[in-house]
Length: 137
Image 1 (cartoon, rainbow, N blue to C red):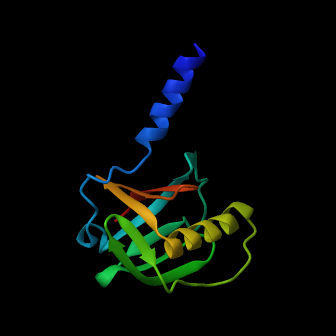
Image 2: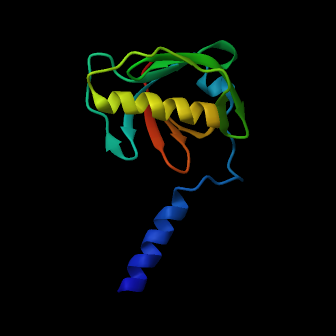
């Protein structure tokens, strides 16, 4: 029984890995769209007055809000999204979860995150974090 559970967990871990043979997301698929954050590491984001979101503009200009607003010029290469010069406001929010999201999205975009777009579902993932967004435009 223990072996069966171990094999099952191992299989689940592998399904979360990015398949390098898979077609990469292209900038044209993201540009002009707004995505609202639905979950962080599988946990639903609670509704707020200003929902956490991210928008992709022309030439991969990225802007959005978690607790603070952020923006920068993104680069999408082989399924990885990076924003070298990410600007972000620095206010403290009453909700600690939103403060943590600021840190999470900042680190993901600066260091690079794997991007997957399936229908209206956008996923940004690193080894530590997974953010799932739904297209809202």
